[in-house]
Length: 451
Ligand SMILES: Cc1ncc(COP(=O)(O)O)c(C=O)c1O
Image (cartoon, rainbow, N blue to C red; front, side):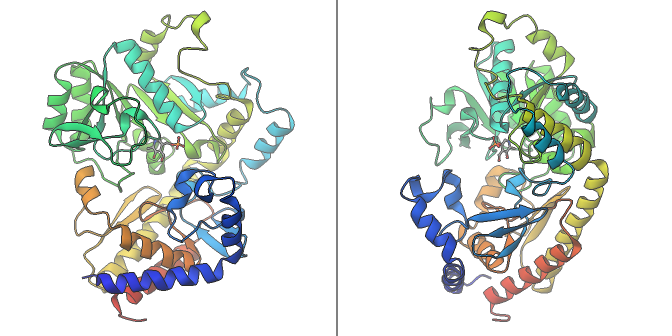
């Protein structure tokens, strides 16, 4: 259905337009190359659809402005880090106040008490620890899982993403664990640390857990990083049952599935993991993350970490749990990521999905839309993928690039790496409807329906 030659021409056209309209970003990018590899402070920033990243001036709510003076609707929202909207009004005063009174002490502040109680209420786990990033929360959870089970392996689902966690950069190939393509400098061959099975494959999961050598399953309850893939009916029940039967700990990573509701997918569907991790949005954009444990897990940890070795065990970190992170989490949970906010944002995400679906239907495209709470995404395939392997096979890098570029040139930022949009409390109905219009125009320009 897509004429690849025409697609290439459209990309060239949009790239030209992008370069012409972003001269300041281009100049800054050229200067940055002198001191940053590839001209960016973090290597993923090269993966935007333009020939260079746009440099940001400022952001407020669901919008931001770049150094060339263009204003964008931000559906990327820091790939979830700013799901609260930029500079969220409900959290900024408390964050500023904390900065004025000191940021980091390596001592607890009273905000920790409120945060612990609130996390318990939302996720149903009584005990918590704090990290600086979701990656760290996952790493620490895995360390603790191996520590208390004395088992070697971690099980993850094919094409998962859990941050820069070594064990998770593995994929399955004909039943074997191999390095995920692009894995830079792996510490060890992941086959030594990791078992990988496809999401929604109960039989494969049962087989992998049967020997009793897996410390933990680390999973998103709904996969989000190779596109949104929902669990089939009964899959999460089987996962819980099989992990219990085999003495394997079940860790849910709610960093992205936090879009499902105030307590993530766990809270929304009454799941009962042994451990849970969540980062990104939870601090309203301030780096912080948490990992929680059930009573039974806490019981097994207690007494196994001696005071003398507390700072060299490989969990924690100097800045983790700092006063600023705690104040930011408290304010974000108390005033921003509230039940009312979710209700509003989820309704808008439905409107976004319906808008895109209407264009897909009008134009007879073999595409679909998937949604998880206030996170929504369109796919270039006819039916929802069942697992990561199927999803990875449907990735169309060129088509993604075109759609992103077109949107960018029309004042819309989508999440890089896939066609995902997040809705914040400041996203408006007008923003959503404008996206539908731009999406329709981009499709028409591509199909030649209208140029
Ligand atoms: C599900 C999930 N867990 C963890 C992470 C890691 O987050 P961070 O890069 O902030 O450490 C990500 C990042 O995209 C993620 O999608």
